Image (cartoon, rainbow, N blue to C red):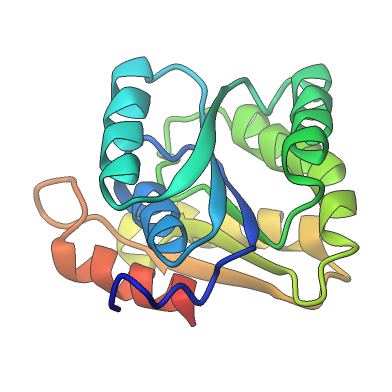
Length: 188
């Protein structure tokens, strides 16, 4: 993509848990393609600051939001903030790929429920809204299917939802090959 090609120019996006790995790859791809992106984090301030540095280095525009999506009142504030700042959303990415088997199910599932409840209305006016949900890939163990099975019904009825399985490599991180395939998927 050349510096003048911005196929996502004018689009507005939100990416949850975008401090590292798969979600940071999506946020970077969308930002580099011209979208204004709201980057989200809950506790990883250092990761968030690193994400912002990387994001701005591509010439991308956006904002950084710290909140707990599992708290409905904070998710409601998120929706109001994005309505005020962006006027709506065209692209949404929920990052559940970082969920581990040891994570409390209530936290991640409530975060998606509350987040979507307050973000779905912001996609209503978009002519072509897209939702990308990053879930643990099959290499992450049997519980990965459980994650996808419990998340999918939350988005029932939305015409443009894609689940994308992301598996860690043997070192416990994400290979550049996996992240590149995710960037391609995000721009498709």
